[in-house]
Image 1 (cartoon, rainbow, N blue to C red):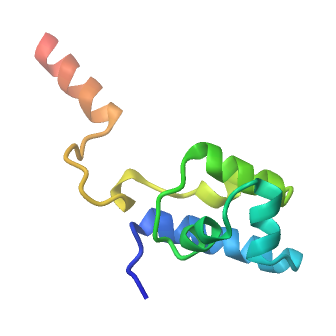
Image 2: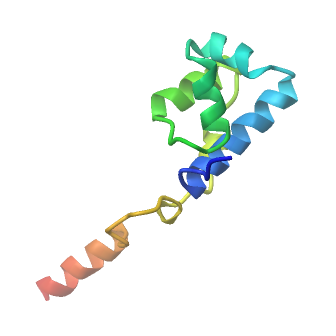
Length: 100
């Protein structure tokens, strides 16, 4: 089995799958309702791809779920390869320091 694309992708996929199973839906059901290919649903559930916001919302809508529940608690550190490890607060603090 392929490794998850990122920790964030793994978590979102796991939460989507839990919702789908709780509702008694198959991946095929969700794919049809969300108007996407079943292969994509499977990849998202396994964390093998980072779904776009529109994809997350479409899948959540197909299950009458709140997409916010799937992304709550995610942080930028869960996405590999980020070159900027600073937050907006860090940037503002540095700008104020430079201004005197």
